Length: 277
Ligand code: GLU
Image (spheres, rainbow, N blue to C red):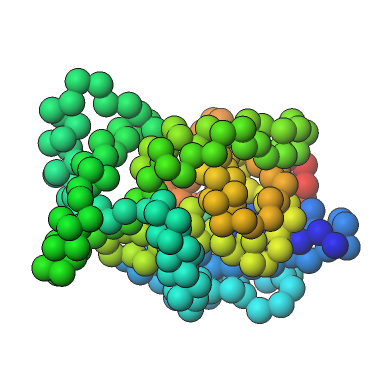
């Protein structure tokens, strides 16, 4: 039986673009007589709020997008993500990074050739990867806070691919992410780690989400391979745009379901728009 999911981060009210993502996952499951799950990716306490998680659920119900089983709330499962980090540490695939943003910027400025990652940002220059075990132990013992980074050179697996709906097998290039952060100093685990763990745990068969998240799939596929998790299929959908062709984003307050509802637009009209998109 097919399982899909909608996995919003409750950092604001449900936006029309995200409702479209929910609709795609819901329709996919319902059309196949499968299960549609709802998951709150609220791992970052500085950005997520319980009231937004509530309002997202309220808006989904209003739209008529019903989900199966209880909502998984990531912040209630921090030990799960810690075990994944422990598993990667046992394989010597993660290392503590003590750098501040300023340290990284300084190091990059001093380097001749600083490569860019898939999001256009500069890759981590690997400063803390080169620390000795003794230096790491000393700094941790001194109470210095640290992030955890994937040692991409050690973790890289050649030849990984994933199945994308309508495209077939796509070759992954997770090395483009460099030594990606899997746990920040102030958050217990990254989006990449939690989303892949939970998709595996919840036996999600088709990951449907906006095409803006497609590049991250290369990294997710690598984490699946490293942890021995099953490989879901992927169906990245286009993003909704406004009348001028501009992508809808959380910044456009007018496009929250809340404000659309307040204007008197019906759930049915929104679902019809989604079905035609
Ligand atoms: N939590 C992510 C977001 O709100 C989406 C996760 C996913 O669908 O992979 O952007």
